[in-house]
Length: 110
Image (cartoon, rainbow, N blue to C red):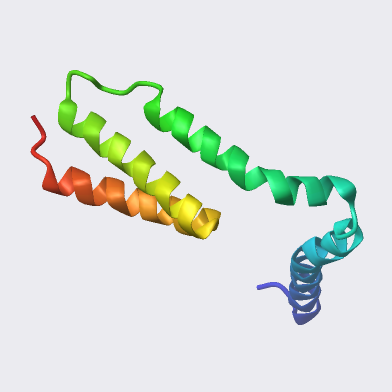
C-alpha cells in the first residue's frame, strides 16, 4: 500500500494537469479573439461545412435505389431551404438531418 504522501502527490499532479488542460482553451481563445484568421474562419466556415456535407452526401448517389436517392435530395433541399430562410447553419444541418431520417423511415426501401 503506497504511503499517504505518495497518494497526495499523485492526486495533486492529476488535479494540476486537469486544471491546466481545462483552462488552456480559454487562454488560447482570448489571445486569438482579435485575429483576422479567426474572424475569416467564423464568416466562411459554416458555408464550407455545408458544401462538404452536400458533396459527401451526393458523391455516390445510389440511382439504383431511388428511395435513398430521393431521401438524400429531399434532405439537401430542406437544408438549403432552411438555410435560406433562417441563415443559421446549425439549424439548417439539423433540419436536413432530421428530414433525411424521416424520409428514409417513410419511403419504401426498394
